[in-house]
Amino acid sequence: MDFTYTETQEMIRDTLARFLMDNYDFDKRQKMIASDGGRDPAIWQSIAGELGLLGAAFGEEYGGLGGGMTEHVVIMEELGKAIAVEPYLQTAVIGGSALKSTGGPLAEAVIPQIISGEAIIAFAYAEPQGRYNLANLTTTAKKDGSGYTLNGHKSVVYTAPWATHLLVTARTGGGSRDRDGISLFLIDAKADGVVKRDYPTNDGFMASEIYFENVAVGSDALLGDEGGALPLIELIVDEATVAVCSEAVGVTTRLHADTLEYSKQRQQFGQPIGRFQVLQHRLVDMMMEVEQAKSMTLMAMLRLDLPAEERMAAVSQAKAKVGRACKFVGQNAIQTHGGIGITDELAVGHYFKRATMIENQFGSIDHHYVRLEQLTLAA
Image (tube, rainbow, N blue to C red; front, side, top):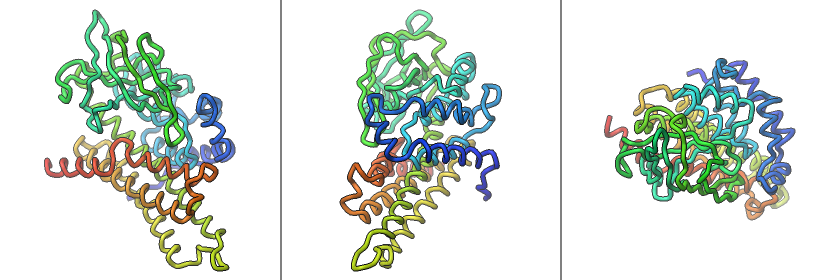
């Protein structure tokens, strides 16, 4: 199968790679995440305006470049190589997918704002009791006249401190784990009754605990049909999972490259440690894990348009493999570096943290093994 990128996709990758090399090196990233806001907003505006990359995966009718999921994969891999904290996943991949899938006036209004860098979307879907079950919701959206009233708690909402919009899953009917009765809303992040507790995450991002206290939203905030949003949410999460897998490819690529470079510099018994056969074997095994993770990610990307069961199986296969690659490459990078590998002063420790977080983002290795088993038995 041909995995060759088009000339335009190669241009997107090279353009972003050069920009990140010039503006997002490790020292600059450290200053960004240590600042009050946890990022430099000028970087996001440059990616939107100067580079025009926030529109890469949107149709020309919205002012985009006419791409799709492949462009997301290309961009996410480069962001992974820089462990960039930019809200691309939540805004362009997740928010963009929800809006493109449902269309209508809301999509026509918000997608151009995403492309211009004005809108930042946070995906408020996870709840403390939910684990990885997207239908396990206690957040409710009750009919109130022509609109709805939201109440509930969403946990670890990445990029929420910076968000202009919140993409919220809520129950408009049914029981707490029923597949029916789930709806999807896009609301103003500063709406009355939205209470946020912001905090930095272990991997350098920002997240929030969000509480909805009688938040009134209009009917125009509803994306898709009332009570029938779970299939769309599952699709959005599968696409986000593939995007995170691509980010992991970028992260593990850097972990391998930095470890290889360190093995050439670190001296032991009068010679570089990279000359020891055991380390050569380890570095080759790390490289193989990275290449296999990339192949599985691309395979899953190509299967996103298949029927739901086949799509979900492909995504679970990829995420389980990528999770194992993150663990293997990350742990071996730290072991090779020794104690210095987990210090704040060395980049490899921060890549390891991000790789560890990706292992469990949108489902752990065990979760995806179980999902794959269930899908296989059902088939």
